[in-house]
Image (tube, rainbow, N blue to C red; front, side):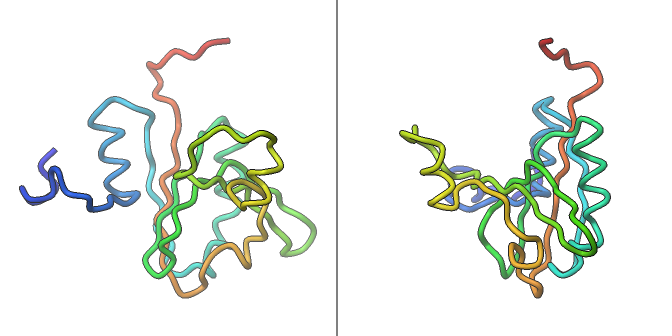
Amino acid sequence: MGDKPPGFRGSQSWIGCVEASLCLAHFGGPQGRLCHVPRGAGLQGELERLYSHFTSGGGPVMVGGDADAQSKALLGVCLGPGTEAYVLILDPHYWGTPKHPSELQAARRVGWQEVSTAFDPNSFYNLCLTRPNKNQHTLD
């Protein structure tokens, strides 16, 4: 794609949300719209955007940060009374077949987490909000 130095190919270096959105565009995957949040505490201000994204048919949201190097994929948002809010987080690196879904929840591979504790307030975050391409067909 040309955005990385020649030594990157074949390396074990990670890519972030910005590169993931470039890959989606390059390979014709779903559209990825980027949203930069300078500090994790600022995610509280993005909840309405995330809620709107999911209620309008948007797909999973890839999340990457700097100080918080734990990758996350957001699958939903639950806005409670006042400032109470939760996000449904999936660990995108998990693979395998659990004997029961509760295993995934117990291992914190998937589950609802309070926004105020799920994100490092001092880390920046890039969000890649995915949406099906207009010319992609979905199965009904």
